[in-house]
Length: 316
Ligand code: RIB
Image (cartoon, rainbow, N blue to C red; front, side):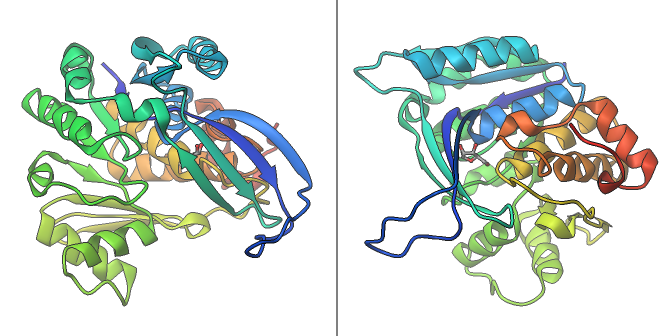
């Protein structure tokens, strides 16, 4: 029961910089830190800290980064039965290089390495964990064939399938009948709409409504500091506004949102309350440095909601 996350691990080497470097320029950064990260891992931490019993399914390298992830999974109480290791000769643990700018925004380069060794056979080997979960949460930093197989297994078992389509990649058309909830950000939704030949300009709300109807899928679209909204294929919409906070590091905020949202949905919470909870969790996470490890615990999110906003509580 709870949330199964099928996805990636990236060991983040994070740099703070005053701006983007120009081509050929060497720019002096202002800070460096390391963090266990990757969209899959970050989402698993987000779900676990939001109170869900959480299992992670993914691939590490047989190296010190992989060991750090194993320690982190253990200390977060995340089930790692289906976390495999491939040997260093094949591929090491995936790495990410987020660059964080003074306004808290970021750009990221990833080298997925071991994450690309995950295949449909690993989805089959973790069948029970997927079938037992209330929600299966996935992203696109691992091969699409593996995502497809995990979605099939979950769909057959009535496990809710949530796909966070990040980073953008073309998807096989048959995946759509297996997805219950699609959670792009604005840029990803426009990219998917464009790849499907839909006009991708204009209001994001109109585009989301047209997309939900055309693909017959529910959407939750994240809008960064503007909040998020939900839209169903029959046009029902629901919206939560962003929180006023001082952002220091937005890396992993969308992942915290997705993990927290799925934890709430796994608990049976209604969509509007689940959205509000996930939105507050993401807002708190950007006030702290780190990738997935900046996700707040359930009590902190509840305190923020009771206080009337994430900017109204003291965060550590
Ligand atoms: O979403 C943030 C994550 O994207 C980072 O942790 C980075 O590793 C990339 O996977």
